Image (cartoon, rainbow, N blue to C red; front, side, top):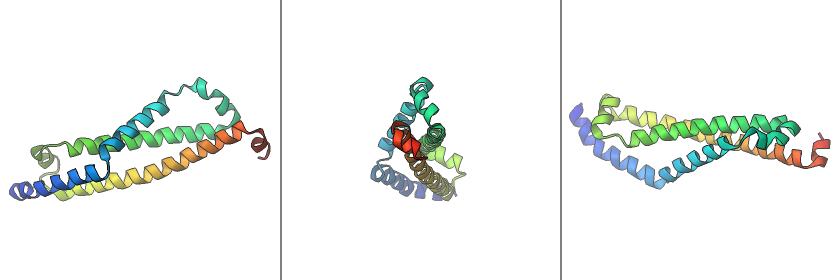
Length: 141
């Protein structure tokens, strides 16, 4: 089993490297980290006006932050996984690369779903801000 793992590891490593390169994975990780840090650093006082005018804004913001936090966690864990040595990967997955493949696929699927949900939450937040900023839209509700 260990011997087969070593033989397959080279192919697996190439597959991971191609994925990281083709998906611009490192830049995406940095982008998500930066976005999450920016979102988290906005103080409640800076948003007070929008929160008072539109409770929907606060809900959308909190959902966006929560989603982005999980997206960042997933990408960090994938980055750590991609950086494991052959021995570390073997020990972690009991020398079964199918387990590693499956975990990576599940994490990528979850991240894709969360990114979609994040886009929806962000869109709702932008709509709430538009309504708060436009007295005619606010009255139309």
